Image (tube, rainbow, N blue to C red; front, side, top):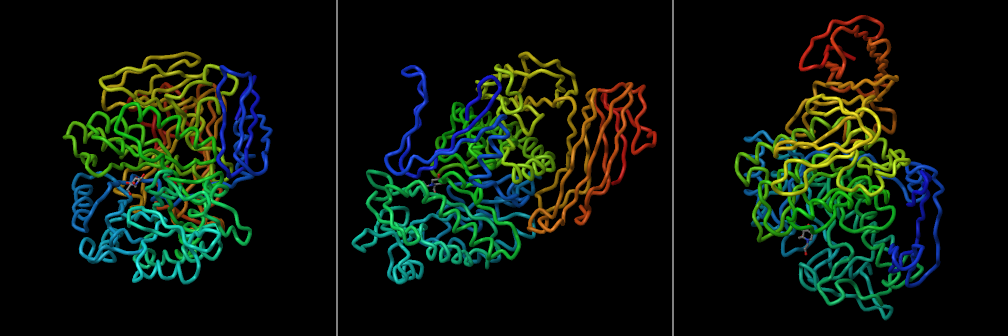
Length: 597
Ligand code: MIG
């Protein structure tokens, strides 16, 4: 994407060979891209704004489907939670400590000898029971599924793959074998429809046990050898138009995503699948959320996660996030606290850590840190209605949830190089602290009036400010003219929100918000089974009027009562709700009143 004089355009280079983008500016006065083979197919997205480019690019490559609500809650992972008892203990701790959680991820140790589509009978003697007990508490299990299938004549998946000719082969007909976790393994040829269908259907093993989400790893594909991947001479079926791995390497993970997502969708009878992937190609957003792979528990990696997720968003992947706390190396309380503050606002929010390094669940570094981490996991749940609405919008337009500042301020050159702060939607600024022992940071506020989210103080934009941020403080700023819904905190998204707060940050013009809700887990919203409430606020002659219209209530949310909180207005005004003057309460510089929709 390029932005010049406020005008934006994009290029999508659709070539699956190994490609290079040369963005050096010191040697030539142009950028270039090239590929090792194939056609020079590229598309121009004409813009003229960054959001137009996103719409154009995603009309070509597809958009993220609306995820299930539970996919947007807090996820806890570890390489690996190794036994059923360990998982039960973990969940008990979350509930005792009253820390919300929606999903526990099971890494490779749940399997029998790393055989996909199995559970280890001694570590997980009764997965059905575990999963149903967890579901009762509103928590889901997400097992990892790698593409490598263990070579084992007595293992049905291997047998079926060989018998039905579903594995990647050389032109001579011999199967390609590579070493991965299970040892010598074969790899499904996802370029072949029959293999995609077969693989998708195999997920019955998981859905039969109540599983609704899958985690795809090692799907580049990664192989433990010198080249770290499959032999480039492997000849993929490519649905009857054979091509080498040299040409199709880059779409292997994407096609595994397609096979998995479509298979899960068929099996879940109308429920939305959740899929997380490490690898993909342009368009992978149609099938999966993407996490940014094996980072380390370094402050620099926390900082790098911001541009990584922003760039994924600009590449059509609205649903992404890093391993919160860092994957490899030992995390610590301060790093985890700061990382969780950031993670609360990344589209995907999962704490994950590697074997042989310290555990990093929210309580692992003592109470002082636990309190802060809990506060921000709870904040995520408060913000879910707004995030959900932004996900809904992203599923329709391709415009990402997490945005670089230039996307909203393309005429402000000050924003072009900024990568240590970002926007959620169009009007909320998040500026995480990214260094140890640091309690102050610079924040750029573009033109206009901004509210400090925590204090309600008004700040004039068009300049840099210093934000003071002790350990428990994440700098957040809300642009005037913003309407923000806030849920009451629940232990997980399975526990329905029963009270909504609408925060109003008036500016001089009229502003409006469509609050969206649905059942959070089915595709019924596609048949108009959703709730939509329009809130329009006018601020004239010092008085504020709030007008609401229910646009659709085929789905009726459990929350009926709404507390309206008007910020930044003096108490000598009139507040009018749907044409009637209302009595309000004055609290910490805000004016609030209660209504039902
Ligand atoms: O070779 O499954 O990125 O998240 O915990 C490492 C074990 C394989 C890499 C993934 C990581 C996961 C780990 N996997």
